[in-house]
Amino acid sequence: MAHPKKRKSKSKTLQRRNSKKINIINLYKDKLSKQIHVYHRGILIDKTIFYKGRVFKIK
Image (cartoon, rainbow, N blue to C red):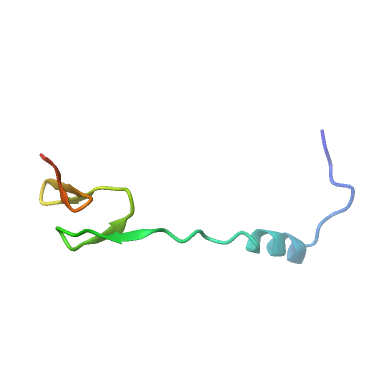
């Protein structure tokens, strides 16, 4: 079982964890429904799924 040779301080651990940044989510404004949602995902409005500016499926 692997063990670290020396103990890492709390500040070094926090610096390492802080270096990972959050990715920016691509947002998209739908042409038909005028709603903002995640890119390449359909949006559900009143039992109707909109995708790429057109009605994809009606439930």
